Amino acid sequence: MGPRGLEHRHVSWSYALTNFQKTTGPMPFQKVTPEKLSTSVVRQIEQLILRGVLSPGDRLPAERDLAERLGVSRPSLREAISDMQDRGLLTAKAGSGVYVADALGSAFSPALVDLFSNHDEAVFDYLTFRREIEGLAAERAARLGSKDDLKVIQAIFDKMVIAGDPAQSDEAARLDAQFHAAIMDASHNVVMLHVMRSMLDLLRQGVFYNRRIMFQRHTNRDALLAQHKAINDALQARDATAARTAVEQHLDYVKQALTDHQRSTRNAEIARQRLEQEQARG
Image (tube, rainbow, N blue to C red; front, top):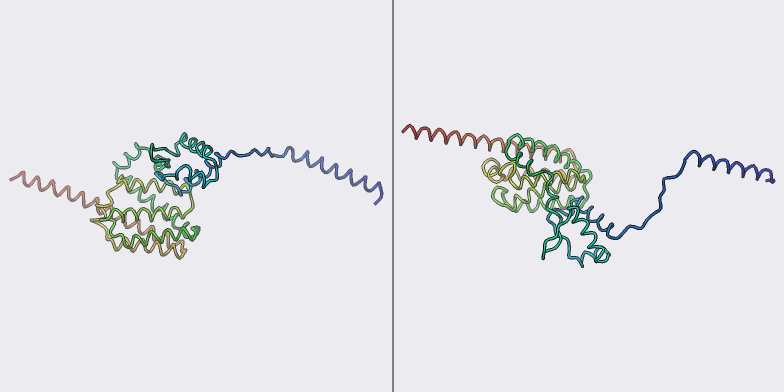
């Protein structure tokens, strides 16, 4: 290629580069700045809380142990923990250690919780909400849950089999709630996870109804166990449709048991009033 050809090619490339720069404008890049170690620690602990690996009330390892696990200095760890305490994510208990803040366990204000506990319509709306959300969570868990997720659910169910009747055993009732929480975890949606953990916590507190009394009078332990088995079997088989259906049928059963319980309570009160009136007549 002659000098004239090289000169023409040089001019063409120069024009193309200039035209590209004019078209695209300034590129959106910024200088990279090193991240503080404490910031990396904060991000890691935040992710563990967000994903439900760390729950409200969980105690963090001792400072030296945690610093070694994270590969950071103790001053960097202290700075990270101080920042998370200031933002209400962690709390320190004198002589005990650092814990995930209990306040993170509730998505509802005390005033709203009080309203829930005083109005029956909230109870049935609660069960309807759970039916929809847990049905979706079971469907997602069957499709998206990892092998370890399903192993956790299986392990909890195995404990439920030998724990006895949730109407008689606190441990059985705890495992029942843990089973449902594990399904939420396996759905891998952090918003669903935290909202439903708050809902299950209200249930454990007896905000909506007394689970023990209701189960004692209006449910059958074998029926409840069979329902949880159907849920677990569908999840282990990764049958998303069957898993959702099994959860919905289980919560329909609970809703009917609650309806029967309320009707029975109302009838008992009417009978008491009639008896008092009859006794007053002499």
